[in-house]
Length: 85
Image 1: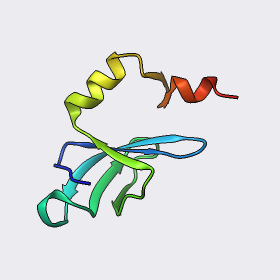
Image 2: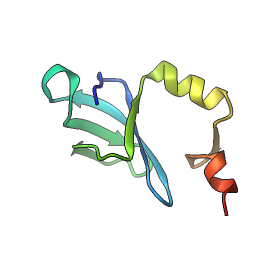
Image 3: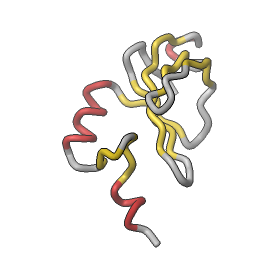
Image 4: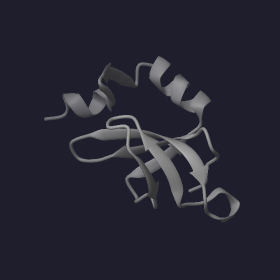
């Protein structure tokens, strides 16, 4: 996993999806850990992302959201996940 400052870290858990702005990249060649500002609670933390996380550039996030992949309710959450039983 690689990132640049200004990219977004998206973590898809079983019940929630979190997004955080990557403010700093501390690993070699753009790798973790990342210093992330979480949108849901405003906290900032140094993160080593797990397997449920992925990085999107600002452009990719905009394209992802404008393509109706996400529905905005506070935090964005996948529409597909909401329809599953």
